[in-house]
Length: 182
Image (cartoon, rainbow, N blue to C red; front, side, top):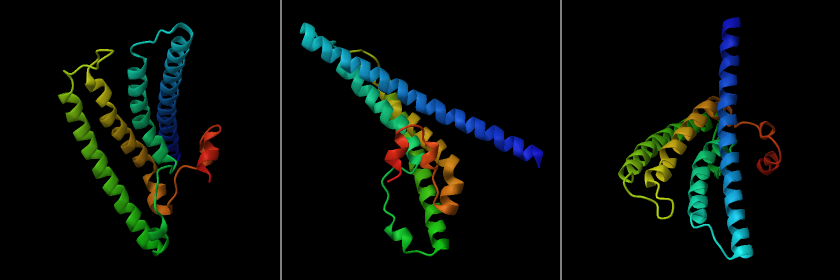
């Protein structure tokens, strides 16, 4: 039994590192986007000069933040859901429906990873207007985001299917937990 406990602890540490890395990627993107937008607005009003690439870069950072943050939102049960049908079912039927939902989500995520990758590869020769980077860099957010969604779903699947449980809002640091506990 100690070996199983050690493996579980190692997996928990790996999962925590994965979640923290995902959170820090979002924090860094949001911070960089805020600095760019603030600098652009300040320059526009103080010097009548605007950073030519600021709006484009901020938009693409927002796209990346959306896709990178979707997995964390899923992990804490933050996506929109309709629970009325599930509440009217027996506990066994609820578990079966949740298992079906997980399988449907995994299939959808796999399709989106494939479609997103193909789309990004088709866009690799087209360049963005201001920064002249390949659009594949922007559209790579789709397969990366859905891969992260897949990992986050697989990490919570047991608790979700068995008990309709997501990660607790208490696990969410700072003020974010207040927005999830209503």
